[in-house]
Length: 195
Length: 195
Image (cartoon, rainbow over all chains, first blue to last red; front, top):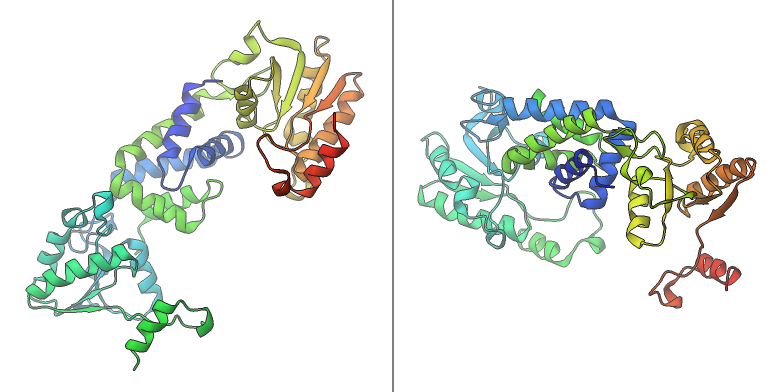
């Protein structure tokens, strides 16, 4: 059973992150057997997104305009710049309703083992953006994984060199958790940063 | 952050089996940021597969021809017909090298809870195919899940009604396993079918 059109589809689906050969097969069979409309829609959505999505020239997130709606919003506090790894992280912060400043989206994080260096996460663009004379504080909201911490450390050093105030999201016990189920490193940080 | 082209891509990816909103976001960001070539290839592969893939008129598997290569192979034993749920199951049997007959691919299995009835898995087409006067034995190789068993039972009853010999793959202890790690129902079946 070697069918080039089917094998090509399975190969293309395998390139998606988190999709192995079994999932790719299942997806291809599902689309061809049960959801040809979905397959058509996915092909069109891919083409449309490739054509229309570009990076915001200010915050680097994905947008269909030159500058994204958030960066253009005059109600935003332009003195605050929050650095996040991905648009999904930005969306999570927005949903929290706790932040009124602007953003810079790295579209990644430092990961020396995977060959992702400072140049690959737009650090130079961030320094240029943060040094616009309006930004006063940069909030580093990269993740608290090892890679997120390394990214925050490297960017923090460079940003402090520009004379900016640099902060990091607080670490602590998540809302709604029982202490006994919280990992020890989180408890230690929460104790150290108690207020 | 509401960007129609991006949201459309995320929605289309969510329709893939096993993909939730978080995975769909991650896939969309990955494609746009790191693998635009992969996105282009996926769009082309989808269009290509939708255009070219049809069902084999004999075994119902996916093929680009009227009749698939397996069904056309004169070295195959046309007296044996093996019924499988998916092309992936067929491929697994082929890799095992243990079968030289022909196939019928259901492209599914009975699942009354999901509204998948006998009509949805091509049972009428199977009965027509199996009743061609050449087939002598039908091997039901649907899975040993509850749904696979129900499918085998329903198809077996109908096929026996045509006067055909109907068999099922043997159940037993998987090759290379230690008995202590095999589940009890498998051991019970292996004991009952001992030879």
